[in-house]
Image (tube, rainbow, N blue to C red; front, side, top):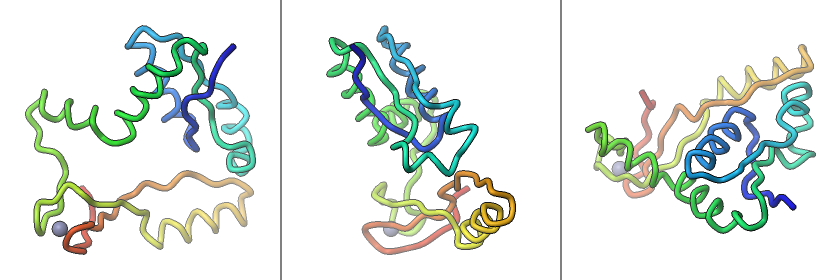
Length: 138
Ligand SMILES: [Zn+2]
């Protein structure tokens, strides 16, 4: 029996996490990625693309997914390659959120209305949780 350990709106992100789990020796698979790719507006109704592992590997997989989601793995990589982690340019805090710009959201809605298709948005704006500073991410 397989257990769902993560869900994503983006099929590509689900495959990145599948590859992460496989690199740790787990037998991970991705479900519904082709259906979501063929009909993106259904993604929310379906609960996203599922990353699954055998039941006996679920705990280890959830720990890896959590490390990926909270940025722990990214920070390890940045330390390994010598890059400094992204931080607020005003105060240096690593506690910030990201969001897509309003123009990107409007474009996505327009494409959906006139083209019956849409696309995922990238969080290209940052907002610091400590000082409230807002910036355009590079
Ligand atoms: Zn700040």
